[in-house]
Amino acid sequence: MMTADYAARLHTVLGRIRAAEQRFQRPPGAVRLLAVGKTQPAAAIAALAAAGQRDFGENYFQEALDKMTELATLELEWHFIGPIQANKTRGIAEHFAWVHSVDRLKIAERLSAQRPDHLPPLNVCLQVNIDREPTKHGLDEAELAEVAHAVATLPRLRLRGLMAIPAPAAAFAAQRRPFARLRKLRERLADTGLVLDTLSAGMSDDLEAAIAEGATLVRIGTALFGSRP
Image 1 (cartoon, one colour):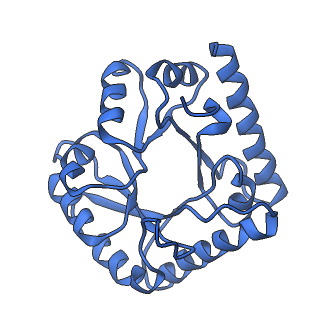
Image 2: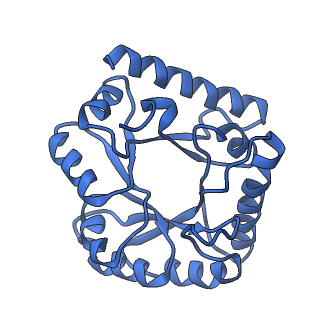
């Protein structure tokens, strides 16, 4: 695909985001776009970067590290959004600005201990298994508050908010329901004194529903890159 094609897709996705902000009375610019480059080549990342995209999400550490090395001259911000293996926490802590998929305290503790001192605190979101799917990673709602307060005390981390990947749904109202639950969970945590400014929610097929329920960051892959190789 040519660079112009990526630019056109980026323009379309940003248009969807801005339209949803307006439709659901969100402030202009309230929602940030994270381009998800899982299995996409570095050249595709570079093409989107040339069109103005700066935030990129990756699911696999080694694949991400290879792209970071190849694209080191570009000023990009990298987000880790995939399941986290304990033996990968050091590399993640050393190379990423954000981690969206913290799903247990042990992982947060390792990221905190392994974040280099010369880097700013690592921005983290807690992943919630919002639909209680047995095959999905994420914290149960019942344990969320305890883990959130523990993570908020860890040095070298900055707890930013919550992330979820709901079960797919076709109807707009059905798409909104899990995002509404996620929003309410963040509100409950805020009532306990935690300052959380991020809801990482929404993908290519449901970003409007996520924005309707307060998403501040949408993770978009297919609508930007097309089908995975």
